[in-house]
Every structure is written in structure tokens, then in C-alpha cells.
Length: 300
Image (cartoon, helix red, strand yellow):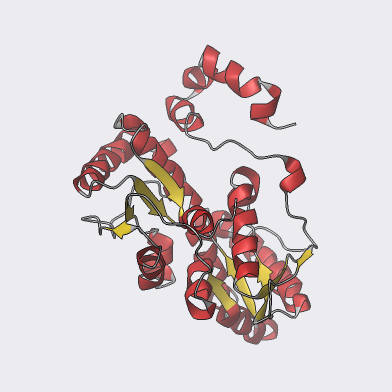
């Protein structure tokens, strides 16, 4: 039973116990998404057939935070891939990408996780390895650097990196998407630093957003600048992070957007908190790009 289903979340909010433990944690608890029914969850080791003619076989990397908090977005990712003609498998033996370990200097542990993932995804026989989290994707694409001094692994690591893509890259490559609904309102986009600066994925998300029927896409000033989520930077340096975020929200307001889109769980929660802090939650929503595209395709 999930936190929201059990009523525990309401108790946490009513007593404000998290605020007493940590003000930053209390603030972020407010913007956590509602969890959907576990009956709708995808399964590790599962296989999901393409809709219509199969164009490619995909191995999906759900990630840790995405799987724990945003698993509806992961489900929508799978269904979007199916909609453009992909068979999707979820390697059962995959593990954490190792980003948090590498960031903390636990390089040997990160290498172990990388090797486990390489083995799991190799066994899938997939054409592409797809993720939807900028931070995870950046780490996956650095496995060749992580294992550069290990002769038995470097070739396998390079092959893994060559097959690793962000969801937006593949949706553009194998699209177009089967849009069924017009979008009402203006959309703006906040880059994930890891997606833009490490993976070099800049135009694909924007191209997808511009292609949505009825949507008006307005570029936000400073969209390429960090939102100050930065892993746990916003927890450890809350005041500094909120100062940067508040400036970001001023730029978002200038676009008159009713939807702020991003491509990474940390960035998404940060932007949702920004909307909450700005008092515009009744006018503006912050969504993962997969949520926007899925809704426009009639996928719920």
C-alpha cells in the first residue's frame, strides 16, 4: 500500500513532521506526485509488444527515482515506445546506473553496477537501450569512460554507450508520434543539465514539443541554465537553491506558459516546487515531457 493510499501522507502533511525534521524535505514532500495503482505497474523481466509493424526492439532502463516515485511516467514511456512500433523489454537483472556512487567517489561500486547493467542489457538483444531521466542517461553514456582502464570491459562498454539513448532521441528518430488530441495552452521547456551538457540532447525535446497539435511552444530565457536541483544540492543548500529557482520562475512567467516541461526527475520536482512557491499552481503545471506527449497521443 502506497504512502498516499494508506493515509500516511495526509498525516505527514497535517502534522508537518517533515518540516520539523528538515524544512527542505517538508517542502519537496508537498510536490511529490500521486502514485497510481500498483496494478498498472510494469514488470521487470516483462516484454511489451509493438503496436503495428515492429521497427525496433528496445531495452528500457527505469532508473531508481523514476521507478520509485514516477513509475507512471515510466509506464507512459513504454506505451509511447509501443505506439511508434517498438517492442519493449525490461531487463530483469539491471541495477542502479551508479551515478550517485560515482558522484560520492565510490568508483569501484559504480564500476560493479556498470558491469551488471552491461551484462543485463547485452542479454536483451535489443537494438537500443532507452531511458527517460537526464541524470541516469548521462551516467549510462559514460560507462566507456568509467571502464576505460579495464581491457576486458572497454569494448563492451563502448557498445553499450552507442546503444544508449534518451527517449526523446528515439521518438524523433522513429516517429512521428500518433497524436490524437490538441494541446490547450503555451508550453515552455527547462533543460536538464545532464541531458543537454553531457548527452548533447538539445533539439529533440524542443522538436517534439513544437510538433504537438494546438500547442504553442515559447522558449524560456535561460532555459539552458541549471534550475539548482543538482542531485541533493537543493536539500543541502536549500536557500541558495531557492534563490536560483525563484529567478527561474520569473523567466517562466514571462513566457505565459501554462505548462513547464523538463526531462529529469530532480528537475521536475524542482520546477513543481517553483510553481508552488510562486503561488501559480492553479494556473501552471510542471510535467515530464513523456506525460505531455502521452496525453497528446491519448495515452493515459
